[in-house]
Each structure stands twice: as C-alpha cells, then as structure tokens.
Figure 1 (spheres, rainbow, N blue to C red):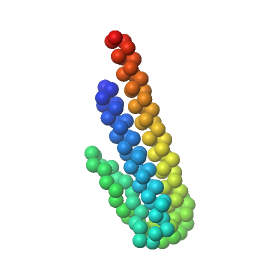
Figure 2: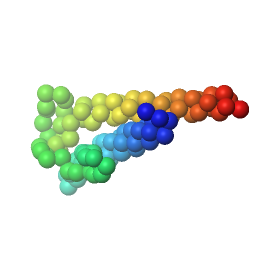
Figure 3: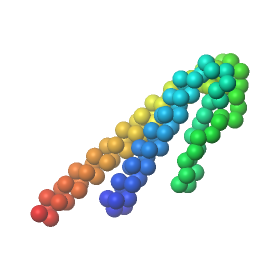
Length: 109
C-alpha cells in the first residue's frame, strides 16, 4: 500500500462514517414524526445510498431496547458511537500518513 492509496482509503472511511452518523442523527431527530420513515445507509461498491428501513414497526420494546415508529434507539446510538470511533481511526490514519510524508521529505532534503 502506497501513501496515496492510504490517503484515499482513510478519506473514504471518514466519508462513510460521517454519512452514517448523519443518517442516524436524522432518524433520532425525526423519531416522533409519524410520517417519517427511518433511513439506513447501504454502501455497495463505489456508490453510496440512503434507503428506508424495511420493517417499520409500531412502538414496542425490542430485544435490544425501545423502538418507536420502527426505530431502535439503542441500535442507533451504539451505531453512532461505533461510527465515531471509525471516523477517529481514519482521521488518525491521515495524521500518521502526513507525518510519514514529512519524514520522507526530511530524509530526501
């Protein structure tokens, strides 16, 4: 893996995590709107898309927590936390690559 592919990979990871956090935040912000259909992110190949969740259920208690209009709060919040870590890891990858590039330039100079 060269530096360029590392940068592109980290940027892709940051974009993916940011999109997932944004969709989850929108779901949580609109949970009380009875006409809002919770969304999920599906990333296939190079295209990313936002699609409605398939099983819109009435308010209930699920095995993982409380659901409202088909939205599982526990799943959304833990997903946000996971994607925050994913985002941070990719940002640190970019920082490490930047340091490596600086070291290489120093060696060449």
